[in-house]
Length: 168
Image 1: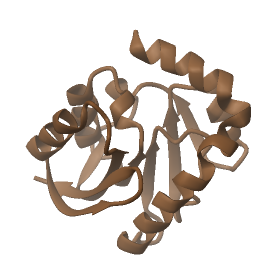
Image 2 (image 1 turned 180 degrees about the horizontal axis):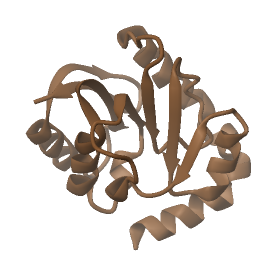
Image 3 (image 1 turned 30 degrees about the horizontal axis):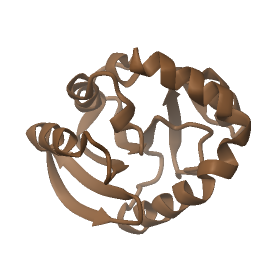
Image 4 (image 1 turned 30 degrees about the vertical axis):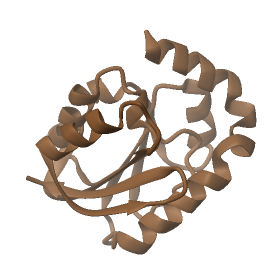
């Protein structure tokens, strides 16, 4: 599958991942932090966390299908789970914030991934999803997200569209 290929790819590049992506990711994280007021002691899911650059304030759980990238994330002191967005192992209504940076276009099944995000999101939670604005799946992603969430803010940065959302 596409995901297996990507997992192998990210496992292989894990050592050079910082060099390839860190600066770009940190730019998006900075923008998100400017627009997201994370309350203390919040439960946060970083979905597709990679080596984890977020440094989010709160009780952070990182999920990624790449075990090699997760090893780097675990070293930064967060709980990590090696799993796919389409099959999250958390109970319903688990998180106050879900943040997913440039990962959704890699999901095998975007609709199922978004349904899972919705399932593990508390009713009053905030969700932030970014994706590559030149992704061939851009229209599909926007359509699926709008079906399941209310977009409260949309920010376009260099390479990504950043969507801030609440539950419908």
